[in-house]
Image (cartoon, rainbow, N blue to C red; front, side, top):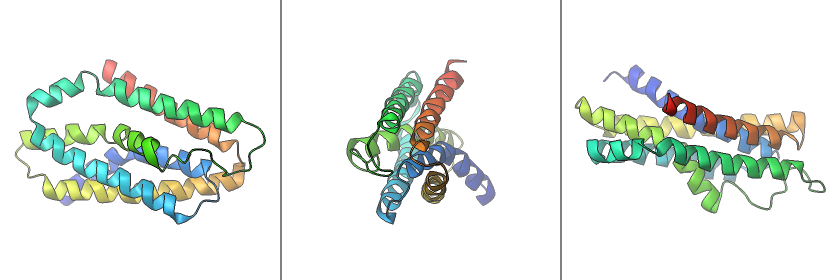
Length: 187
């Protein structure tokens, strides 16, 4: 497969991660670079490993996952989005102060999983057309890492411009992505 085709696929897979990263970056307007690195590494690694897992999984497992992957992604994004909206509506907290950092712990794991499920299917499709997965998986992971970091930085800029309530916008974006995933799979 040509490099430009692989890069285009990788960019497409990274768009959900980009939207999530913008929302989280906006939520955490004055954060250090550690959360950016955590989120970028996690999203990139999940995209990388899910592509490989999909490639090795084979038809039976992918068909089984395909029957409910959209519901898993929707519920995770809905949960995290509603939580962000709730926290954005709470009074008395300074901008960027967080009780729960979505770039740590269970939230990070769930977001990484939700944004990388499509990579599983891409890895599987590569196995059907006899494309060795290693090079595409590395490109997918690196593209996602880069796009996520850019999204977090852009989100930080939005937070400076729009203030604390931008967290509500981030939550709405996550929910909208979840709804889009659900609608696309239920057609």
